[in-house]
Amino acid sequence: MGDVGAGVVEAPTSGRPDGPTGLGTHDDATLPVSVRSAMLHLSAAQKGAGGAPAYSRFVNRPVGRLLAALAFRAGLTADAVTAISALFTFGGIALLVAVRPSWPLGAAVAVCLLLGYALDSADGQLARLRGEAGPAGEWLDHVVDSAKVVALHLALAVALYRFVPADRGWLLVVPLGFAVVGVVHLFAMMLNEQLRRNHGRPERAHVTGRRPSVLRSLLVLPTDYGVLGLTFVLLGAPALFMADYVLLFAATTGYLVLALIRWRREMKALAA
Figure 1 (cartoon, rainbow, N blue to C red):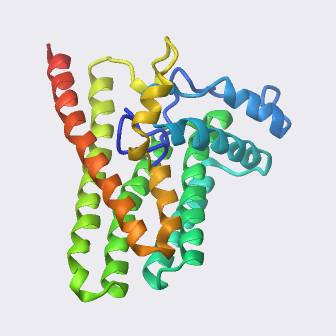
Figure 2: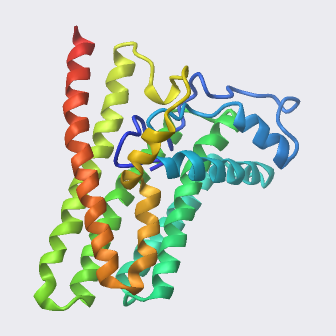
């Protein structure tokens, strides 16, 4: 789900629309010939960072840019990178369900989720670099994002049911609630962008101008998917993991409530 934080990312950054930040189409003479030149091309065609949580902005996108350049040199298509991203993400989710919580498991799950997340950023960047950006790639990205944003929390609910003592079964409510919040947030972001397009308004991910606020990126850090992925490192200490997970759920839910109110006002303004 691209740089999908639960917070202020106004558009899923894993999509592949060929907009103002796209590189357009290329002939062979204009394509970069090295990883370094590919990264320079990508650096000149980044989406706006306005509203992006800090991990997505300062870690995931740069790592995704490097992976996109490597994938370009390897001759991979954007759809292939999307598929590899899904393999890592759902591989980590499968481990979460199948293996009893431990420190090694937590590290493995976190690595899978974060690498899948970086590749999710890379596929859109690669599509723009190769001139492949279009509805089909954007559709595939969003389908995968929709699946993983729900599957991760449901998998945690299954893991809690399997491995947590029965008298603490109330914990199952938290990942179920997080799954609802996650899918509502993702759907609302995609719908926001579609309605903006329909009314001739610029996509927020492409709006540039004044320098995006670093403070704002840090304030919404708890809503970042990358932070959620890092939390799974703590699986070796279940009580600590659940405390952190509950805090992320509360922060995400609080943000979503405020965001929905603001987005509702924005949608009314579109009609006016």
